[in-house]
Image 1 (cartoon, one colour):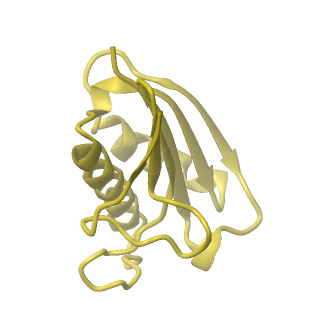
Image 2 (cartoon, helix red, strand yellow; image 1 turned 60 degrees about the vertical axis):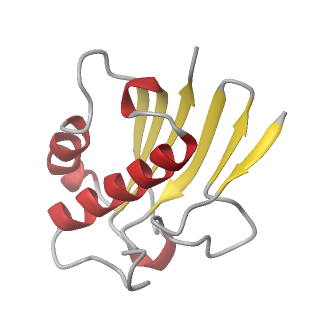
Length: 126
C-alpha cells in the first residue's frame, strides 16, 4: 500500500514530488527547507530560525501522517557548509528524546533556493 501524505501546514512541493509517502509501516519524507507554509516565503534571517523552520515543517508532515519524531529511523541532513554543523546539530537534537535515529550529514555545493540546511527523514511505525 502506498499513500501520499499532504498537508497545508508544511510547504507545498516545488517540483514533481510529494511531501511524504507512506508505504506500509514506513513513512518517507521529502527533504524540507525553511519555507514558512503560511506565507510561502523563506525563513532565513538566521541559521537558527532556518533550522527550526525545517524541523517545524517536518513535524507538520509527521503530524498529518500520525507519526512522531520518536519513530524516525533515518535522517539525512544537507548543509551548505560544515561550519553550520554544530548549530544545526544542536537544534535538530532538541526535537528528539531518547534514542536518536541513524543519520548522515553532508555538506553540498548548493541547496534549493540557496538555503543553508535541508533535512529528510524516514520513519517506521510498529
